[in-house]
Image: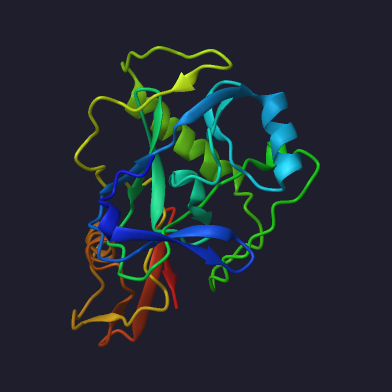
Length: 243
């Protein structure tokens, strides 16, 4: 389910990636993009569907269970494509996987997510990446240590949340109410729109990492520190990514 106003996005056909979702106007950082809804399936069904469709549509739910869209052709966050320098991430909330904007998404920009597939659960076929980002890993698999960090964060954030754990075959329905926004956290990798015009700053020394995150998040653009001769593209695991 997409929770953005219908006039703020459109679905387009992309090269090699099938359908994708594109912003038609600015989307503020922290905005809830949507909720991953569908039918609860087990690992065996997820593997079968992945091989049959040649695409990854199942989303982790609970243990060895996943959520699979009721209609893969219908509008929904399952159409959000992978990128190695994404503008969206996921946040677990009372048994639901919410997609939210990591930073300001700019008009005409594709809304993307790092799928972060677990290499320890490789199922016999490769998930190549076609994001064409200058920072592309060439695969949708991610460093397992980064996956563990995100897992610990999610466990901490959801501690105390009480919800009904659905069985195989059940349908995950929308929540009655959604958060207004998801706040930034250093666990999230943060990238600018790499081909956007940099925002220039005249700082005489480099700001601290939290201030750089704030500027990346608020502008959505690379940060050019003219006096320092640096252009910052993003932050990964608290390390700066420079152009």
